[in-house]
Image (cartoon, rainbow, N blue to C red):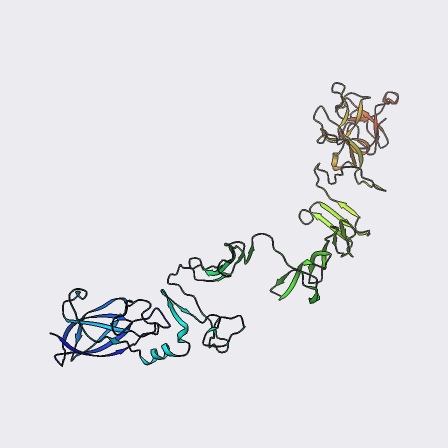
Length: 521
């Protein structure tokens, strides 16, 4: 069988290579005659693309179509489905098909064996819309460079759906036909769900680069400019300087809130704290003016706390602090320092009949409520305790209310007073019957835990009235009972051994506590 003639008509159903490199397949429809009659049967067809009707250069490789059914001479094939003719096949210039044919019904052998060439080469005639695309105004501004399609309109604007720029600096733009409150724009979509679509910027050929991208693996959006600078997580957390923000705003390093320019009429800078219910600003933290920073309460407190940035003076209740800490208030109680609620602490008040100027409330144990290192000076010192005591080290165990004396065997220490009319008597252990000492002296190194010994004032004393009752006004001295006092019966002998005067009585034959006005003699 020798093909005699071939009539060809070509429809470029999907030919748009001049504007889109991804779609270059097209439909070829032809008529094959054999011996002057329309052919019928199965044929293999080979197609080669050239840039001239004869000679010239071939584009890409041969496109072979296996086992084509020909009925009454007519056939239809899809060509260039896999880009056999190459990326430069259709860029708006003339192209010609060189066709070879053979009768064959064996599948898969299209590439082997001889073919009968048909002449002349058939021109590739575009469909009407493709003809317009290839020859319309501006079609020459698109060109193929390798596998890319580029616009050669150097220095001019490229618009999609619009011809006018928004600004003179615009080179590419899109007009979205969005009406009302509809969205309009563009997406960069990737094939993989884990990929990172980005939009980048570069200044010149060697300048800096920056880009924004979406991390498909985490859902976070990032801004890169010499490093990861800003991250917005898919749940709304914003990180500046960190890629793993743990709060709605998470900043790594210092931040700056800048003062308004003078033209705005405000010279402050700071942060307002907003309350949802009621919907209002509640407090402001920041600059009060050029000289002060502080806290402002918007519910009536005003500038409750300010600091002078030049002097360091802090004002509470005043915006004119004249000292390192300047507290001003219209109420009686100026300040209170306590652990919890009414627990012991310090209360500072103004001069009012309701409050003392300074109140220090300590615990009931031996820990001092007020400790002053250095000299403390007052005009009048009023002490609510009952005696003046001094801490002395002791050589044996004692308890409050017991009479103590100088220990002759342990210099500098005291012991329980023993024997009647003991002239080594030194005082009484303070604190018996819940009557605290008024003033305690001698808190020397090593003596901090020693008991206070009353030297003057009122104190409860253990007494022995076995031989003689004790009446108010009686002089008291030591007794044969260790640590106990008794009434003086031998006054000459008591010289130098008197503890003080009884202020309460104790019946004869009893032992117990007697309130004594200590006055050692």
